Amino acid sequence: MKLGLVLNTNDAETAWNCFRLANEALQSDHSVRIFLLGKGVEFETIQDTRFSLLQDAAKKFTKNGGILHACGTCLQMRQKQESAVCPVSTMGELLRLIEESDKVITLG
Image 1 (cartoon, rainbow, N blue to C red):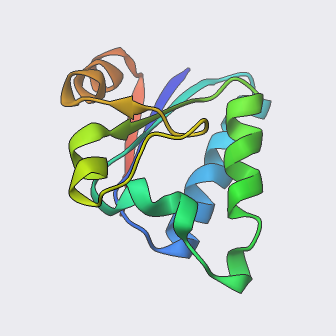
Image 2 (cartoon, rainbow, N blue to C red; image 1 turned 45 degrees about the vertical axis):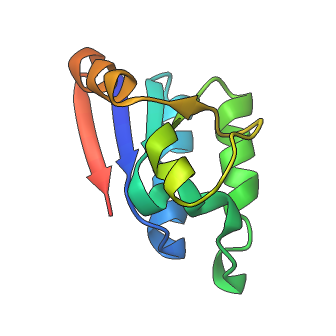
């Protein structure tokens, strides 16, 4: 199955659960893409000791073939730059994610 996840929050627990689900789906041989939208583009700077492994979960996701996109406009509004884990993307890419996915889940 092709799974599309849209992370639209900087809430530590929600972001953690997004990457947990994404990694579980990859382990079950599903294709997974995550699009970071709005406050979701801030996931790399989330500081919460209860979810300290969030960054490791994100790295595991991309290392295991998951595709991660970040809204370029949302990054610009926050004066953030593209990173190795989180490349800049567009609404067009979000639309393609929606069109090409068998299921789309929004978290946030």
